[in-house]
Image 1 (cartoon, rainbow, N blue to C red):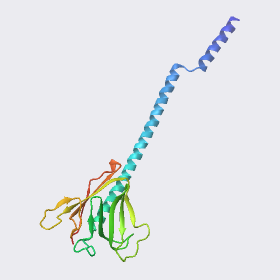
Image 2: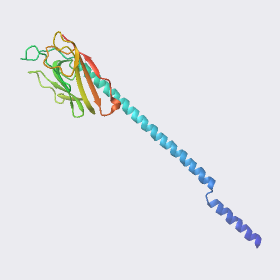
Image 3: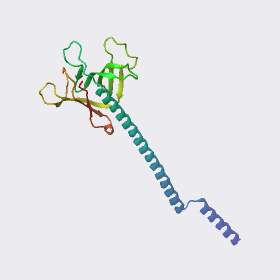
Image 4: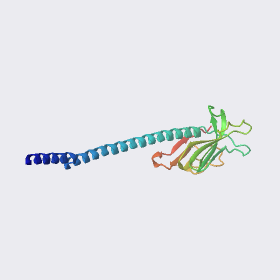
Length: 207
């Protein structure tokens, strides 16, 4: 009888040991959980960094392309005389906006001379196209185009001599002159400082 009781007691102890979780097993489970969590967090962080880098690279490419196009447009400014205002040219350069007559190569716009206005409207840098007097109206949607978004500041400055015999210097305005400035500097600042670029300096034809 005592042998039978001892056997039953051993079986009960073995079942109790098998039913529970030992301290070693608990520690191993916790270590595995920490390792798996670390891999997950690292993967998420790596994916986020990759997304941010790819997004920044895409934004940089768009910014450079837009600034290059803007520089090409300004470089096509013509020393066209303004109508009924004597010898002055149709070029109104201010610190925050620029109006001029440029030569369009066609494509989406009619070929030939067109009026252009570059300015900041809210947080957008826009180029407005102004057809010359008597010309056919532009297709809908081509009057004003957004070149860059999230712009916080737009500044123009102009290099040249306003009058004969005076030194050529940088100035904030170029108004009522009988010739174009030699250079136009375009400074664009963005809400995202990672998109900042050095000022764009454009040379203008004088004849």
